[in-house]
Image (cartoon, rainbow over all chains, first blue to last red; front, side):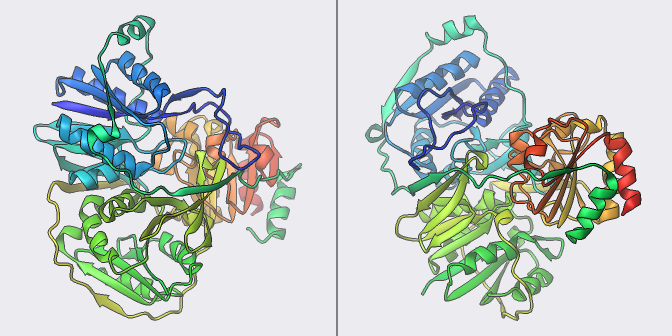
Length: 248
Length: 312
């Protein structure tokens, strides 16, 4: 079985986000970029499936400009077998991404498509479900445990009420939650080796994909800041203040 | 005039608290008709009645089919998409239920989606958080159906007292059989639900162990509060993940939030931005949590918490 893992280039999660003063988005010039952390978990899970003998090939996919190849190289260095780069310079949003991934799924015929439950830049959390809907295959979102047995997968999902367990038939789309695994560190020799691994490239016309209209971003602003209050000196003062505010 | 549909989450005979908040957002669009749909195996009569009582609801639609016994996105999406042809807007709550379902609905309808509406500017312009709430985008959706989730923490629940009719709706469409519900393992608790509680007490790494979390439960019970935790406390194994508050857990907006032994990592603060009053109790006077807390108290939590309980 082949696994398609989708990765996105985003601002590194350690970077403190700064909104541009002109409202035109957040500052990305000179800012460290990295693979979306949830996608890293997806890559790790695919590799573990291969190591466990369930999967024969792990294919990493991204859509973006030339720089997005760096994230594919990271996936290859982690251990993916090959990569697919879909070249696209302009903005693309989840529905467009899902259309591209569906075209690739039809071409590659994977048993599983793994992706992060959301990207930490736009926080949309839509792509996996949209792909599943377009591909007419199951969606197992927010996975914290994935067990493959034959033609079905048992997925434990992190939902508001606790843990939900579902069975889905292959092929399926799984979106990964934080606690599914801890991604491995990439070693230097693996980075060298990754440079020799194959990377195919496509354009949207190659795949016959037409993008839907975009949700237009009009303005980006910083969130209203919460200003700190004051410190109290004692439990009595705390309780008195809360009572005064009618909170207890 | 527009028509708006809300897909309601419900379970164990109760309407989820997020529905009344989603409704508050929907009413800002002043729709001519506002319907609420519930999917169930048995008609979910009690939850339908609760929805019918909410302010602003025109009709409650109940779609009962055996396949709808457990709310699975892949099974519900084709049904919602079939209904969507009659509406200008289809909204769901930003709970795991809504976040799982609504993108599939949008994809089947062939339209983009807006995640986490936190404000309505006009009929096509919405405000939503990005970068874990560290930036706020104003966005305009293209022509056609609008599919969105509503960030419950940004809205106050509408009141009751309404009496909308409840109608059974039959949708004659074929549903996928590739996905099957097995079970839900919920942390059983008599305490208020974290996401709808008006008061929440949360513990962090400072608690030190699962046993020590007892002081948090004890104070919460005295206050009638829900119990949360920081990601550090979850990762340390003190409490299960469904108690996690923050960017990677639940985003909540109680009237009173008491953070105990929580340093205040950005990812935690992202989950409590909309809380009414934040109280921080921490032994480190320099902890970042004090920068956002309305009321701070520096000291040893194991000494202070019992004192607070006694003083209440």
